[in-house]
Length: 117
Image (cartoon, rainbow, N blue to C red; front, side):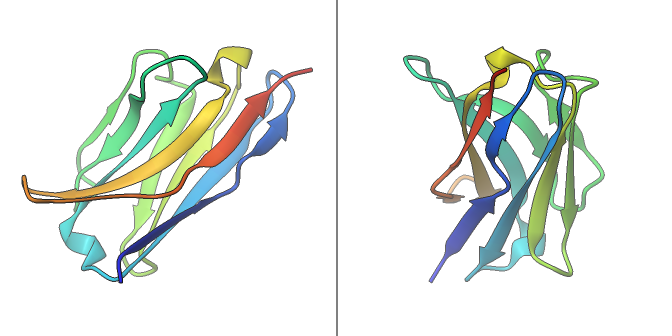
C-alpha cells in the first residue's frame, strides 16, 4: 500500500538546523512531484517547498527562501528538506505530499518540529 513516512523532526534552538526525510513506498516515486507542507497550531496547512518529479523545478514559500532546501533521491524513493537558521515561527507539524496529475495525491502522517530556546 502507499506509504509516506516522515522523520527527522524534533526540538531545536533558534538558529539551529534540522533535516527532514520522507520515505515513499507503494507507488512509482519518480513520477510524482513532491512537496513539504506545515501546519502550526491554530493555522491552516501551508506549502513550504515543492519539487518536480525530475528535480529540475523547485518552489519555496517566501518565509523559508534561502533557509530551507528541498531535494529528492529517486533511486532511494526519498525526499528531504534541509532546514537552516530555524526560527520559532517555523514550529509546526511538517508533512510530505506526493502528487501526480489531478487524481493521485498522498500525504504522510507528519513530523513535529519545535524551535525554542
